[in-house]
Length: 242
Image (tube, rainbow, N blue to C red; front, side, top):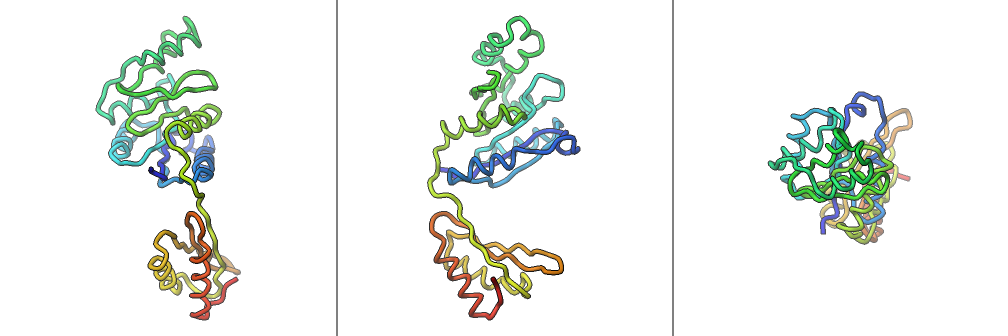
């Protein structure tokens, strides 16, 4: 079972600053409370070449990935077409998506809204409880609308259906190291890596007049032994911390 996911957020408006992204924080919470997490996050423009290149690379990996944005019916919504190109398949009307869009809009589905039923060949639909216009899945990628009101319940559905909770949540413990540069902590971090391979040590310098280094560990389950070892190693080297 894979406990890590990727996230791709599509939209010029995010890169230009017209809107602030809300997806990253949501997916961190969604995955974290299930004992899963994000391995990477990309923010990409509404640009065909960039989308195809990144999706082609992403689809070649084993990582499941959520993709938010660009699956609407306007000319700047390129994600459906680029997903098909990255997968090397054509766009085709998906019968279930066609039926849902026709049921939702009737004759007003044509000629524009029905374009949202053109999905990459082989794709499966993801139900949208907000307005019934579906997303889709293809090659381990889950394509959702950019609107959080739609995307987030759809992501919850994907997780419940395809990715059961992994169990123990990620835990984190840290101390503030005083009057010691990061370089002076490398040996301790290497020691922790060697003794506790399931735990990941980290250091975060905090700059300024009262600067310090946050030295900590992350891991699943009980990390108390590793945290005790971290403090004991600091004490053994007479490195002040609190």
